[in-house]
Image (cartoon, rainbow, N blue to C red):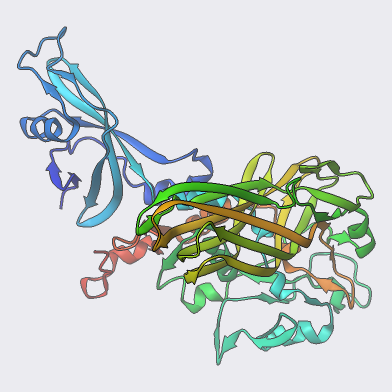
Length: 498
């Protein structure tokens, strides 16, 4: 079956001799690290009568019958118009996005249209180059380095939040957590050459677990028989070699910054007042307020803090840091009249490295449903996010309060709304992670992952297993992932990708 391109649900004539560059789900995900911004492809469409008529109606082409080399038959069009676009190859949907007309060209008396196809789905993949796999949060697997904790992994158990927890059912592994497989890295052993002590065995992390956390970070999931197979769930990423990490607790304390969050001069980290006319039902504009974190510094042994208001940190050494933001906020939303109120409050923390947002995490949320009059709520939270830094990386933090879907009922006149968010005893700590194999010490398994961005990690898996990756037709946040060989199975075993 030939390839078929639909723009605004209308079939477009395409030149079959033209290499149609829409296999981005294979080729571009193999090299997603080269992407910049939205993924787009520019292709040339022949100016057939059918295409001309379709494009005139979609892109508001101004048409003239004159077709000389000096006078365009298409005098004008609107390049801002975005039309839906789908491309099928042998009945398989390979592209689902938008199309924009860029240029009408006359070459040797033959007209053609240059259109750009932009995929929104690929942007989910692009997010993966903003985080390194050793920045993912594996803190629930922190555990003491003991022989008992190493031995239990061989029977399918992990320490999860300090509790011995099964990571397999029967003979089937879940693909979650860590494992202490015996690998001889060639180091000199403390005891006989054929024996290992507990501090000579670094942990390995299940690849399924790493990929799962990466996809959660990007806001996507997968649908895959292969990824749910035991072959994949048993796959481990071993320590990448070289000397074991040797950042002790003493070094961590020396290379860390500790502080407490400051309210602004108003006495709040976020506050503001808005007034608007109200009828029986008043729909408020969504509030999206960002504040840069200020702090009082209580410890900074190697002078990493550039300024405390706003808080700017230059990392004093290479390695993984833990940003801790924990304490309590008091949120008050008051109104000039005691009437029924509805809204959703969401609070986010953003981490920026060298001016680029590398994480945006929801810390707490609440729904004010049928509240009579003012709203008041206290939120306690304990947030932790790992950040992989090179020396002199510039780190800043922001908080974002969003009030959404807000409405007031039962009042006529000018209604005033005041929002106040106060910080109380909130710790703002930037702690160098302990990274060592010390008997009885704490093992942070993320410390034993390579300094690799998420897009490179996914590219490696795609190359290893020759993955075909495409968005689900019904939900673009679900990626359907299978080895390409599965497309060549017999008809009764073929996958139905429609």
